[in-house]
Image 1 (spheres, one colour):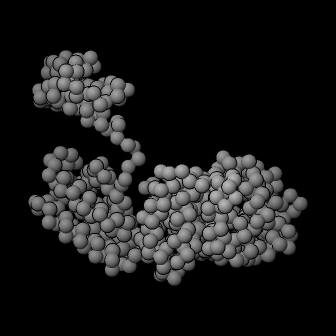
Image 2 (cartoon, rainbow, N blue to C red):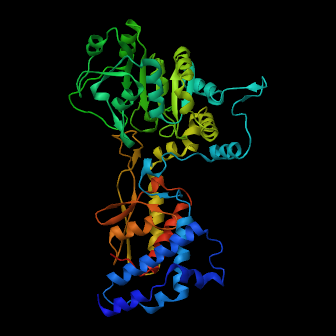
Length: 475
């Protein structure tokens, strides 16, 4: 170690000395001690690391009392800041699992705010004046919209599948096609959930081809359920064959075996009417005669995270009575958001317009192109000549394990900055006060306006202005 580094290391103060620096001025008065001490240690350790790694001696101002106190306060502020924060989704992935999936409608948020900030009749029957069921708030409207005889809600679709299997088939065989043994995000696998439920998996057919006779031949005395899992996050193409839901229901009825379908993302709207790929709707599954159907509340439905279970009343009543139901039940905030979302579906045009996920999925290309052009113009007006902005024809995605083959035509804004790599731009945007999440292609930072909200162009413009005014981290 050279003498300059040794000398600067000796100038590093201890924790007590920094506390003394700020004691008289009360500069740390609003910082809890549990945060303050680690913040001081981090500040000292960071400065020590910079001394050791630097090729030249650090500027002496870094060791001043003012600089050290300011560094500690910045570190403490980072520690005390909320970890879950709003982000700008510029990825073009509408139902982005990592960024919170579906956005709630403003009308839904108003109801959610009221219910979460006040007492409510969560489990109180106002008409009878006694304890009631929390599911009554949404059961009627779910049945109205879907045609189901009964409904129940749990905290996500994986929980819905687990609860149904545990109720209807524990200790018995569940027959399912090999081509439908899906795995979705978070390592949720149908076989694993089935094993946890106590049901016994019985695979039939092959990965790409399953026929009615495969189910017929697999049914025996131990068969408790026939399961169909919609492959909502992948597709098998080419030489394929699958048993339709009506055919599976027919097989189940001939053998007096219930049939369950896991729709995964689930939809109450036929999206093919809006130019998108056809996905089976919840109504179509129930009309086919399935005994139980499960799907998510926060994907194509556009509501909060929830697992929705619909079907015949005898089966749903058994599922409600399962002791696991209490462990998997939803809270008042989820219930409020789900009810308000479902009520929008009474008018399909209103639902498509007011539910953000549906609105973004059906947004006309001309609107996206206009937003991309506006963003381009804003960025090109920023001071300096270091920024280059292009309009690029790149597709958006539905996301969330939904519509895997859908490429939504879109128009993206691609940005490059002289002196900064695309990785450096992405890093800056991701660490902005309001993080902006885009993607990188061909050494450009790409932003897709399809998933941007109205006021977010201002946020992006401000972030690029700050970056252009900053002279650090150009790599």
